[in-house]
Amino acid sequence: MTQITARIPDELASQIDAAAARLNHSRAQVVRQALEYYLEDLEDLRLGLERLSDPADPILDWDEVRRELLDQD
Image (cartoon, rainbow, N blue to C red; front, side):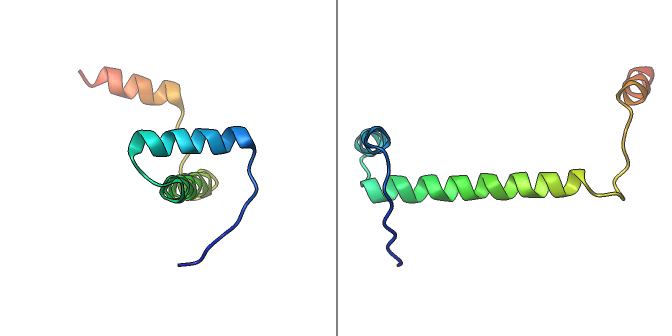
């Protein structure tokens, strides 16, 4: 496993320590999990932006979609 060193504000370190205490985890476990969640969210955002910019994806008109949905009853 690779070790990474980073400087963080004291307040953030206190928040990490408090979370670690609540979860009964080490500081390293909390930081590792936070980074994993962040990177997963970042990838989700990248995929969303990629799909939004796909020229093959049709653009739907909200009013038209709403009418079609409401008229089906």
